Image (cartoon, rainbow, N blue to C red; front, side, top):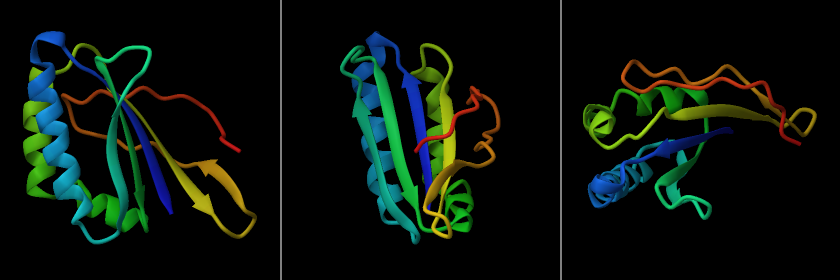
Length: 122
């Protein structure tokens, strides 16, 4: 299983537009083959930071997700709502030893910058 976590700082003046965009993205993505879950959450410490949590059956399913029309639209509209950089981390669940290990990071084409951090989640 592949798990992706993302953080999206959004501009206050376009918050409703951002929420609508995230709702549309979530709804369309949950219909994709291999998608286990895909949901945005509002940050408690900063309601203008949206958190993305997604789970995929395989890395191939995740890669196919990046080729969808709704991802293309999302990436096109994203720069208009952001108030800073997006950070993402991707993890792979490896059942052989029961450990969660961080795998290579998801790489987006601009304008979606990523922040890289070394971290292992237990």
